Image (tube, rainbow, N blue to C red; front, side, top):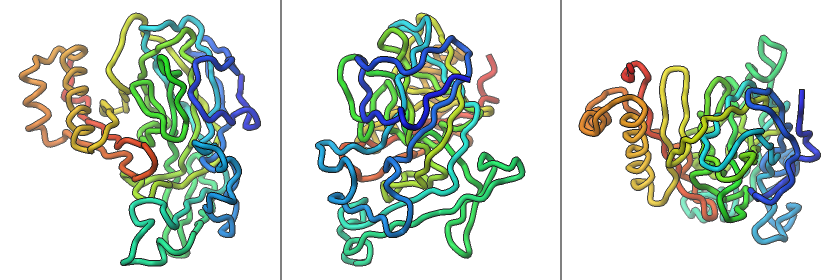
Length: 321
């Protein structure tokens, strides 16, 4: 199987001028071995998130959140739609999270001084599951608390139309650092294509994450991601879309949060009208009265220039064609 190895998965920007590291045919499975968001710096509780100690943090913007790519998809052209099928994610034997001064919404807290006066790194061991791998394993938070590993891709996108955008805070219709827990095995992700070959990048896998990624750091980990890419010719969409086994999700990223929520809902309505034969009136009323309509607030952390990321979700049982 074709693969981008971890030693090559250290790009820090979505750049349409990068030479492809891999070329694949539509439907061909391949793997990318990803670094964690700290590029391997965090290995123990003694590795603190002190900027002066972190490699690459003497650069502006810092070299953080590495991605692997680009992957060239044969036949992809501007104006096509990319379909990403995530087949499997195998995470490493641990993950980490880090808090401290000037990190996240409580990085200047006076109510809880320990959050703003000292740096803390927590390491979470991963135990294999019934498969013998971490694909169905367990994350140990502390002596009392553990939960199933629920891995997903935090940063996924194609090369943007014109700009070179960093993997740390780049976001747009083309994807980027969106930290959407639904970019998970078994789901399909759709993105508009702006360049020949699509030029796909991914990285920043999380072993698990709560809604909003409140501190700005989830359970960050190395991983191996297996996926395949397909094309929908001559079709475009306004922002990322996700198909889950029992639901569809339309995404948007913006600040303030209410604009992200409202626009994601507009995107979902557009999807219902264009692909599922809803009238605009029925789509508008459905998202207001259906008890199973949901808004997911995937990312709402105060970190650099990151926008807030919302997803408008409706179960597929309401979408009979």
